[in-house]
Length: 294
Image 1 (cartoon, helix red, strand yellow):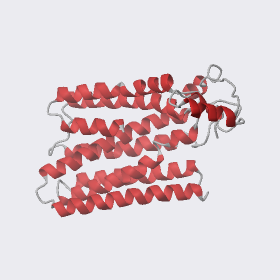
Image 2 (image 1 turned 30 degrees about the vertical axis):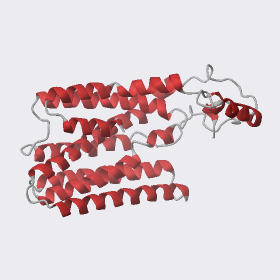
Image 3 (image 1 turned 135 degrees about the horizontal axis):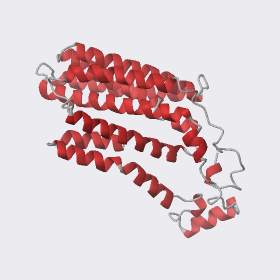
Image 4 (image 1 turned 90 degrees about the vertical axis):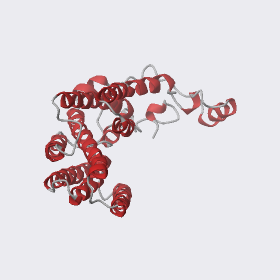
């Protein structure tokens, strides 16, 4: 959600200084969100300050006394930060995905503004195709997991592979089409494959560790945002960014190859499966904290 909002505000800015301010603000939103979660988060539903007194009484009566584990249930930082190489592959891949998705979104807006041979009906049909495709692949991923045809980890890797390869090829073809209506068509196809990729790699953290996915995502998405913001600042100073009608082919070639190779690193960093440090569903949920809820 933050990434979408960031791209929307950047697209609406008029000067580079405004873009820099927006990047700085959104860079610090992830740790602030994590801090709010730690401060406002309750140990369990029966200890949440959002519940009324009757609700607390009902939970205490039907769930019973619960062991206080907030102080003893510390996150296994050593295993997370130094024992899970997949997370750093995820960081690199998410950086590449964010770069490619941003360029594709910029290309879509540029196509509407600059390509004179694109009809309104063509845009409408393309967007309908994109939304229907995104909905279809989302339902398919759920069915594959629910029916146990594939494991969640296999679905993530397949969707990441299909999405990144499709987005990469679409971006390269969009650049090759040399700013024509075909370029715009390939950009829309790239949007669809970006959505396929989003069902794979970005949500893999929830399969690695259901308990600690939120804090892991906050840490590594913050690092990714810092990398992305730094890249944008460097590109602006080198006059590579923002996307224009003159540099569209160069940037689409560059980021088309980038998203492919960064995702390849992610795929080679290990299996997507629940890690040993995660305690999800390992205790009787009526005796432990929210950290052990099934």
